[in-house]
Image 1 (cartoon, one colour):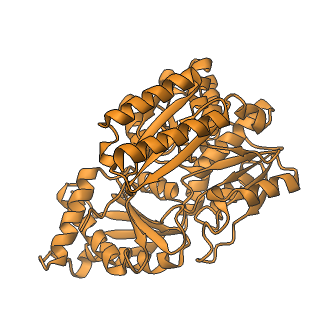
Image 2 (image 1 turned 135 degrees about the vertical axis):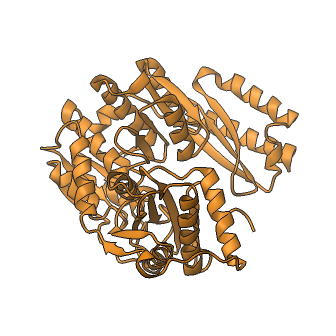
Image 3 (image 1 turned 90 degrees about the vertical axis):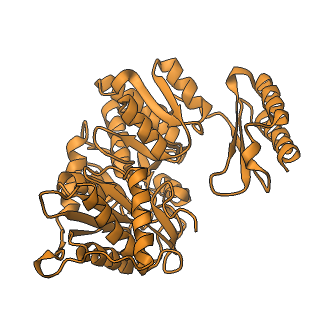
Amino acid sequence: MGRLFGTDGVRGVANADLTAELALGLSVAAAHVLAEAGTFEGHRPVAVVGRDPRASGEFLEAAVVAGLASAGVDVLRVGVLPTPAVAYLTGSLGADLGVMLSASHNPMPDNGIKFFARGGHKLADELEDRIEKTYRSHRTGEPWERPTGAGVGRVTVYDEGFDNYVAHLIGVLPNRLDGLKIVIDGAHGAAARVSPEAFARAGAEVIPIGTEPDGLNINDGCGSTHLRLLREAVVEHGADLGVAHDGDADRCLAVDGAGNEIDGDQILAVLALGMREAGVLRKNTVVATVMSNLGFKLAMEREGIEFVQTGVGDRYVLEEMKAGGFALGGEQSGHVIVLDHATTGDGTLTGLMLAARVAATGRSLGELAGVMERLPQILINVPDVDKSRVATSPELTTAVAEAERELGATGRVLLRPSGTEPLVRVMVEAADIEQARAVAGRLADAVKSALG
């Protein structure tokens, strides 16, 4: 059996891969591991538990709550709230543990469990490994000490979480949004109530779509992975901009008043300039992954902002931000981290800050996003190859060098083995789309020849 924890918690098809038994067992194991690590020492432990609206979240939440309470942990059930809200409340309420049930942008049949440590930070890999080991030992029958009587955990519904989180979002905004008309696509997910409420309290006129979750329609043709409805609504209503979230609302993509998509790279560029102007872009640096469009890198260089690249994945962005003391980072997918105000990507906060920049400057989102030009980007997946030899194949090294010489300073090549599938991703950027397509095709053929 492989490792249960992936890069973003434990995920799988609910009630097939991710069962009630697994959710309960992992929760018990988490309580034991954190107790052994001294997290609960000297006080009665408390956990915050939230979920997105998926139907399976109802029984999985019950299992998690049962597991924690049976291990002596008091539980605050915050209900349907975004992942960043659970992280924020874990920190603001002084809880010892946070648990979020969501599979983010995945389709409805999937679900997931993500644990947060005290302060709302992601659990260290070492603690996840220990939780998994403890869970497996319990499964094989190793006994564990079960509290009884007053020692069992108590469960409380914490309805104040919604207002506390929205108040936090409004409190960190640099300015209000009065005069802006904004379409919000909540993906029928965890931000379906939170995001429209936050934007309205900040002064915007809000047109909500994708805000009627029924447990089955999360991410279904809407949200940040399906922007058509948002583009149409922005144009139809003559809105200044639109923002779209994914299922657990840790991401945000946007649409300008003309219906053009504004991706995570462009959002980062707009926020970086605004934060520098406000004097809060620490070390004049922004962090992004190697998949960021070359146009973003060129724009940051032109504007005199330092750019640090990491591997693909928000966890690597966050690690680099913490290590370097940086305030802003993110991914092209719209997973943006503003570390002064959030411990994880926060789609609602990102959208609010983007809109605040529009309101403060009096410029359209399209004009602001024009600070960077997205170079044409071609991505080809080459399946059924030996991805382990990408970095060591002389044939590929030669092919990449030739491609880089042809593209020059306004192009880029990236060969990346997939982390989950037997394939290699070939990404090429160039000033001309036809050149990018031709170079990518030749490199894909080279990958098949060298690694097939």
